[in-house]
Image (cartoon, rainbow, N blue to C red; front, side, top):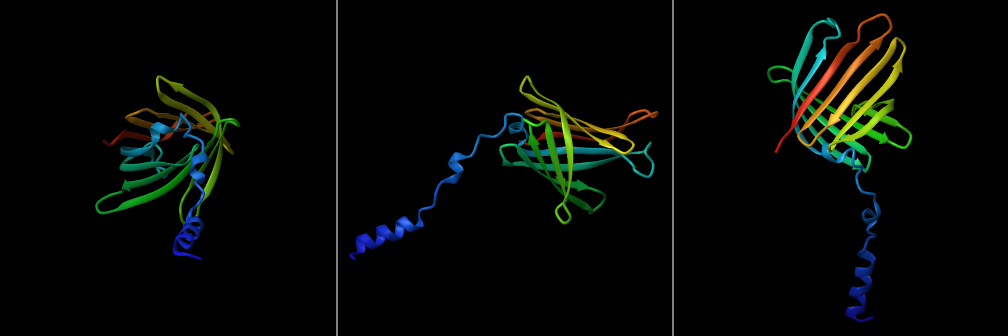
Length: 173
């Protein structure tokens, strides 16, 4: 075998299929979420629900598939204390379902029913919920080109709705 044939044969073995060329494009609801965000998490203290706590927060969002967001949070939890969180949100718009996976060390998955998903003037607006023993946890989620707002409300029979948490972010440039 001459040198030329040998190089062609070796080169052919090194060529890998281009699988990524056949992946679907990102879901239109999720594309504006990609990027770096800065803002706050405000939540009702679990020990004293009438007391609100606000943490400065950084969020980085990427796509791990056409319908899945990967979220990386860094919360400023006091002088010199940064708390990290990793989450994934897998949307199945055809089944009106959302699987939300939280945690890196011990991941936990919670399934939600997507009750609404709309594109309004380029903004993605979602509502989703899950039934819990005492009632319903409801979420309002809006992603715009420059803003991200995710609010959780706890709805319980015989009690006023409680806004448990609210993320408010602005996209970094």
